[in-house]
Image (cartoon, rainbow, N blue to C red; front, side, top):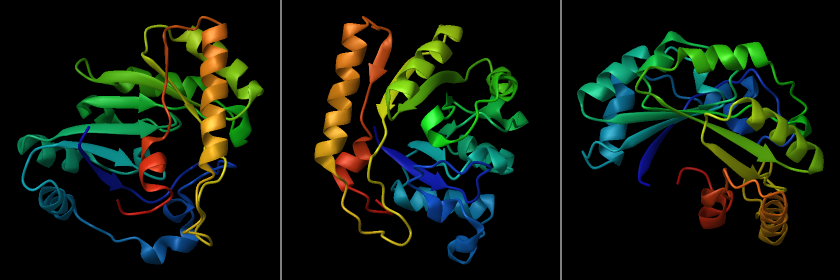
Length: 218
């Protein structure tokens, strides 16, 4: 669906297969543009052609940022807001989100799952916030971990996503995605879910990678 992405800088994780290091590591801070909430919404308005579309807050980890004013300004203009975060940092403004996707990182990321922080993020969502769970899968260990995590939160709509095996890096920003390997992982994941009759899981690829490869700013 149409959305305008607002990408924030900084992250408290360093996933082994991160595809947005340019928005994560401090060595790239010179490329980040400090902007007020009003300036951000002005750019969102320009990109959306004045239509109050969905605004997706991304990163890095957008949960590290003070975004209350941005949400207030955007909602006043008719925009709705979605955010995806790993669930490692809770903010009061989560209650202002229209959509909150919690995406704790699997074993292949090298990052540990902190259940208490995840559940604090879950509890911070507002009564009208639509909360979902998204789990990235790179291998069999990730898949089994995902089965366990999802079983603990059956109330959350679930999406599984195959991990991009060849993400671009700041040093190789024009690296072409290995679509053959990516599709093979997608097929493997679909076959696993089907064989296990895990029918409440939705399996989706990274659509932007299939459409735009590793291109930035699209």
